[in-house]
Image (cartoon, rainbow, N blue to C red):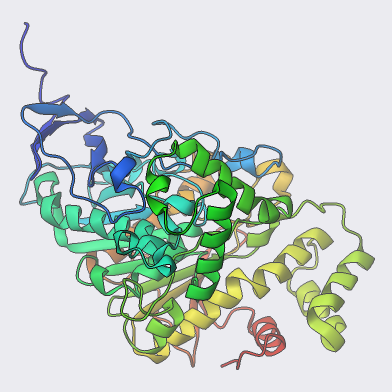
Length: 515
């Protein structure tokens, strides 16, 4: 029969902007490339996000929209092939204020908790279109609705032009985060039509997604738009200072040959020209194998982000419960010295830990007698960076009375014979119940780990506390430091101050008063 598509397979939803058609599979309705804001090209470039367009009739939402302009991920290292950041469907472009949605119910009375995921990639890369952020498995449980978001990044989202005094570009140094707030506004207005509960919204993300979640906690405009937060391997303590971000903006304009009194020219150039200048400024970090930090959201008194995340946490400004997690060997993803010798390991500990380095190295060896020197070096590197930030943020939140939960993931990836250990992102797939990709891999033991971890996250989204019928996860306190540990064998259990001696040594070395 010729006529309208069968709504069982192609469901239609009425939103505030118009009607849209999605695609249903395995009891889940998915809608991709939903615009929550107008295109950021031309006159909207370096400007605050503008409202999404309205339309008549029914628009198709079965394909991914644009992802933000960025330098594509390199495949020169093995880790890159495990996370697939070179595979970004949808096409690069400035019409990138879009989100993707998976829901098990289109009943407005379902009131499902909403899990909003912010993609990784630092402040410079990534997309919610990545295969890593497919929400099908979350929605198939019938317990939650899942959303991934695209937003401006790099110079397009965080070029600080405010120092030049042109009011047209006020706030340009935090536009990428304003985009996220605009997406949350859209969710609040529209999510009931997709079966979601606008009063039970979890925002969470891993790596750069954790940094963005940290930043949202410090943004007054975001308050009330989400009700739980999750920071996975991305506790951002400080963001950009105006002096630093203004200096980077000056360098950016100089590369383009644009005078500070002619900023409108930035809106006239092809985005590829702007991206080329951005990449040049990122190359110093890229050559070191590090995440580019040329463009960061700027903190200004009285502006969108008035406080650094750690300041907001210490001041008691965080009014939603928070989960903070790290994985044991985060920094193995940035290292290539797989054949490190014992002497080289000792030298690295001496360089970082000073006169007590031999005693501290002995703590690491006692913790894991079979670990290769490369992994112990990565573990120290992790403790000095990702984990130190998580320790500091967890303490600040708990001491300010914010309900906080902490976890440590030690189950290693099997990729490349376990070479990377429990590396950066190994907990991401399990949090979504999806173990298809290279860091995990389909197997019975990973399926069990994913079932437990994803259930804990869904419980957090639903009730504001991570819970599971078979597991009690106690809240974190600065005194007891209760932490959920996912062991190397895949076991789940709460411990008080796991790796405490190492934590105290690292914090003392970094001049942080250990609890």
